[in-house]
Each structure stands twice: as C-alpha cells, then as structure tokens.
Image (cartoon, rainbow, N blue to C red; front, side, top):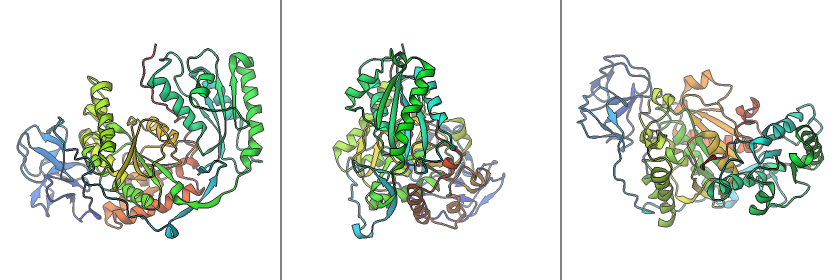
Length: 515
C-alpha cells in the first residue's frame, strides 16, 4: 500500500516519503530558492507540481516518489536539479505482485449507523440517483435520429413531468463495418444493455437503421432483453425513413413520460451508491490532494456498504502490484495481471499509447513525466481497502466494496463502461481542468489545486487544494467528498449538470477491426 501523508508539511517543497530522492515544488520556484528542510538550493526554475532532486542520484538509479519507482535517471543528477522527462527514462522493472499478501477485511460501519441518501427505488430493487428516458442508436447511421428525438424534449416540453430529469440520446460511432461475432460485438451489446437496464433510465427506446451488423433482434436476444412499455424499438427502414422515425420516436417517448414521472425519492442506504472513479488532466498535485482525498471518500463509502469502481487500466500500470497485494484472493489479483498483460502483449505493442510510456502534453506540463508517475496518483482514487473483484469492460458490477474494471484511460470511454456496469455516480479528479459530464448519472469534479479551482469554479465542485495549503487533511477532505456524494446522489445538481454536460459522452470502447 502507498503511504499517504495526511497533511503535506509546510515549506516551498513537499516530501512525500522519507525514502524519496525527489520532492515536489509547492509553488513556482526561482533559481537559487532554498529548500530549508532538505538543506539544498534549486538549480533552475521549477514550476509548481514538478520534481526536484533532494539528493544526488546516479545514472540508472530509480527515481522514488511515495517510495515507489516512477522511472530511472538517464544521467547523474545533482541535488536541487529539476527532474522530469529530460533526465529520467521510462523502462520496465520487476514488480512483486504478492497476491493477497496484504489483504485485510473492511471494518464495516454497523448497519444501524450507516449513511443514507434520497434515492429512487425501481420495481426490480435497483436504486437510481437520476430519472431519465434514454434513446439509444444501434449504429452510427441512426445517431442523428436519436439526437433529434431527444432534442424535441426541451425543458419547456418536459415542464409537466417535473420528476423526469430529461430525455437523453446515446449515439455512437460504430455498430456496422465491424466484426459480427466475438468480443468487439459482445462488448458493444453489453454496453448498450447496461445502459438500457441502468437504474437511472426509467424507460428506453432503441433505434436502428435496419441493415447494420448490430441488429436490434440480435441485441435483444443476446442480452436477454424483452420489449415492453418501458423498452421499445424502431427500425428506420421499416418505419419509413428519417422523418417518420423521428416522429414515431417522439410519440413513443411521449407515451413513456407519464409512467417515468411517477417516481418519488425515498431514504435508502448508502450501500446503493456505485461510484465510478475517474481522473483527467492530471498534474503533479493529483497524487497529493484530490486523488488520495477521493480514495479516503471511497474508503468511507465502502465501510458504509457501497462500491467504488477504479478503472483506466493504462493508468494503474506500473503500480498494479500495490493493488494485487490487497486483492481478496490470488484469483482476483491474477485477473488484474491478465488484463495488464493483454494490454501490453496483444493490444498496444509497437503503438505510441499511454501504457507504453508517454502521457499527454497536459500531464507533462503539469509535472508528470511518464505513465508510471501518472499511475501512482491515479491508483490512489481507489482508497486503501481490499481489491474485491476485477471486471471486464461494461460487465455488471455485483461485488460490493473496492473493485476494478478494465477500461481505456480515455475518460468518456472509461466512464461509459463504468455506467454500463451500474455506476450511478461519477467522481472525477483533475489538476489541469477537465470539463466533463456523463448522463444519465451525475458527475462531480474535484480540483487538485486552488488556482485552477478559482479559474474554473463553474465546472469544479470541490477544491482539494486546501490540503496543499494546510487548511485541511486528506481524511477531512475525504469526508467532505463523501458527504457531497450523498447530497448529489439525493438530487442536488452537480456543476456539470448545471452546465448541461453529458449529452455526447456515450463512447463504447471499439476494440475490433473496422472493415
């Protein structure tokens, strides 16, 4: 387990572990700035969030942050030197997976003392945090139609249905020109089925073209879906084309709205919350403030019986051994390793992909040199509890506690898989300032630093930069985030919802051949 300091010590640089050979600049530092606690002076300008050598590092030595290897020196590095991708290299190193060696059961809060929220209980026992009607396309060819149907239902037209949060289209760029059988088609269909069945959709309309590979009939049969008043289908080539299908779709949704509106919120246990954990636009403070704070909130949620879904497989690579050690069994740990190996050996060889080392320009500017360093912070979002299960993309999440789902690092695609798996809330940390929403679930945004929070306050929900400033601890911020999760799950709109984000973030993972 990665040791997390509750409150970074005061000073111009932050030391994260006694064994580290780098420290982190708290603010922009000029040449000659003295790091009193380290007994050194800075040899060049260093931006906030970036690394400084705390002692002499020889060529080939590991660079240690949180006492975890994040790269290797490609030259001798003198104390006080700026450390980044120019003088550290990314290369493989052996990691001891030690499956289940550090497993500890969760210390659960007594049931009578567990937190609650105001949720919408469905007939099948699922609990929703929002109440939408969904319109899904089987193929890109029906994407315009589903958007036109959803766009008809303006705020004014939905005024007589105050308990309906909206009508939302879920269109995508695939469904034809793809493999007809195997994992690519299975993945698309289980993603669609996960949304159709999602607690946050009161009803759904599925629209196809008619000649696509992802046929509605095949989707329904394979995913064991049955037509009903709450699940209807339209095929454009049978309905009469674009205009007539839009009209028929509007009529179908109109018929669904009265029933969708007949819901009330009731008090339910926090165990019904499944939160998808996301990060984007990460920076050098992500691993110090927002990510460990979100991890502390997840630890709380899990103790209250809820579920946290960590994902983005490329963004745990290099620190996956810190998760396998906490797995509840060797089998669970091996599932995670198998997914890592698939990415490395089958999916990305020879590609300039993130898991092979390089992170985005924004990550680089924010102080992250490579994927090992990014993964160090990303993995913290899952908290410190045991890893209970590992899922493939968009598989239904049934295990309570801290779990992992195999997804890409691309945020809309990753969140789509989590929502298909049952996530009814998204918590998203950012240092550079990602602006994100993911209908039909609410998203909350957690800022790693105060300057960015101030610039993008309309998009950011919680400022975790107070940890950096010493006015709150990681655990205190974790409690704030947990309480905010309960409020948003109860219906309080998040910043992304107030801005109307989330209409274009349905992005099923396309892993197959396009032909």
